[in-house]
Image (cartoon, rainbow, N blue to C red; front, top):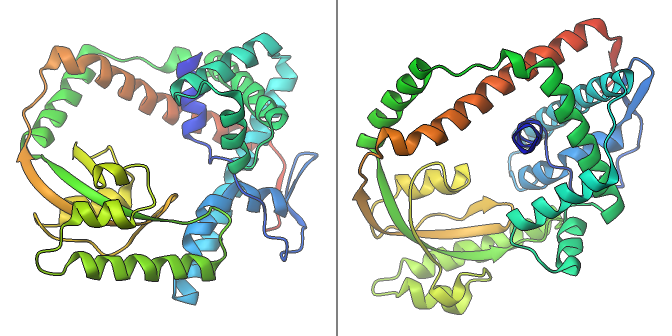
Amino acid sequence: MKTWLGVIAAIAFLVGGVARAELVDRVAAVVNRDIIALSEVQQRAAPELARVAAERDPRKRNDARNQLLKQALDTLIAEKLVEAEVRELGISVTSAEVEEAMADVQKQNNISDPAQFEQLLAREGYTMKSYKEFLGKQIARGRLMQMKVAAKVKISEEDLKAAYAQFAKLEGEEAEVHARHILVSVDPKATPAQVEEARKKAEAIAQEARRPGMDFSALAKARSEGPSKEDGGDLGFFRRGVMVPAFEKAAFSLKVGEVSEPIRTNFGWHVLKVEERRAVGVTPYEEMRPKLEAQLRQDKTEKFVEQYVQELRKKANIEVKL
């Protein structure tokens, strides 16, 4: 069940933030008899919308915003269709199962304090009650996908060996970097003006970090607003696929000793410096096999889930008004 919950979560946007009040609510879509309000779409896309708000070009910002709203609406339509199937098949979830899932989420995030967990949920736009409802729906969707998709997902030894050959080729050419960073934090609910102010602050820090003889570690301890500041912003060595895409792109494009322009993530603006690069060895097949199998299973499952959702869409009466 945990694997299927992960698959379902992977194809959905994370709910977070509050829809912008100045936008008038209206019907974004009708799925059979279910209505999706524009406010629901805005709320689902809120974290991504906050990031594109920093885009200076109005046309690019508007295009990105429209694309994010469309993606969020597509996700909500898929959820409505799946929820209708869950109801029709009478799939239910007990409160004990929801509590167990809650405990797993806290364990995965190394959170033992209930108050800390509630604060984390609040930052993402949840109350404890609404998050339990969200988890219950996720579990129910996972059960539906087990019924409709699980039998189609098959992983052969040939699949695994082909995946390993591709992995080994890329791994043999890859390097890992040792980097440090300085964070200028940005509140998830920050206005575009506040985001821009933080960017300018990060840009000034980047210029300071490029001064001859500047100790980046000492600068991070003095100026960073992230948890790694006490370690001089040290991120250690990491490979591709570990950091968020924007962060990774900068880290692997910089030369040793270079300092990046400000990089935007969910946490704020980062100034990055690459300290070292080194080649990495190829992990043996037997060690990689479980990871490759899990990845292939997830990839194939997502493919079949998408096909199943498309079948539901063809049978449904969907009117998009966005």
